[in-house]
Length: 243
Image (tube, rainbow, N blue to C red; front, side, top):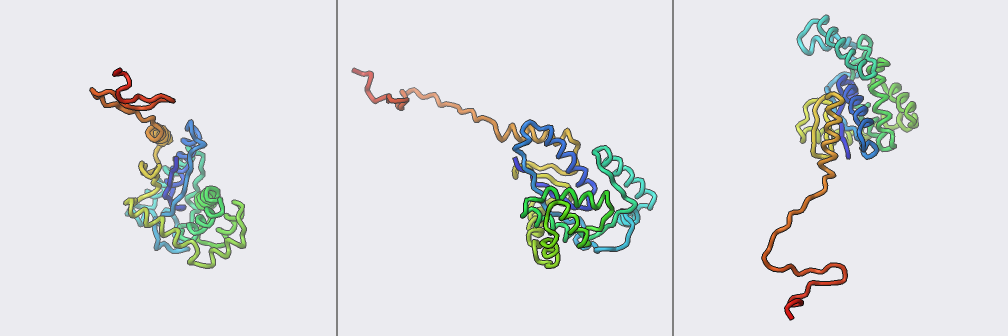
């Protein structure tokens, strides 16, 4: 079973949804046969690398609410995250452009470190208050995941490297009409939108597994004529029983 996950590293529901999915997979009877692949999605491709905005102020301006209302909203998200064992530090978060972080994740995938780097990038933004457009930060995250800092530095220095991989994911998201994240596609057939409760993921995994591994039941046509066939080392020959 393959699960593709479209997400962005500055999306709070992406981190929450990721953790809920992971818990559902652990509880799933066939967890060892589940593969998770992360896909790139930029919530704001035009975001500046360092706009100096406070996350509360940015949210207030975006949704036309007061800063106090934004703080209350973020407090609710913080509590949701805490329920999943995550720590969100909204006061120190640094809104930024995530394109280079996605390029890093694609490079990590080539090295078999996609899952580790994805988790560390999310933690770096939401818990450690790091700027994910800062190359030194990205190099440090990569090294913590076991990647070569020199190789990562070389990748980040060339804007073309792994850029197409990111754009392919985003183009595919458009084909699927994905407008928000997290978004999950199971076996290229079943879709789940949003950070659903763990129980929803568990139910989906079970349902998909049962449908995909269902033993086909064949229905036999009932003919008046006698069948002509072979079984083992004997065949039903025409006219065999007529003499």
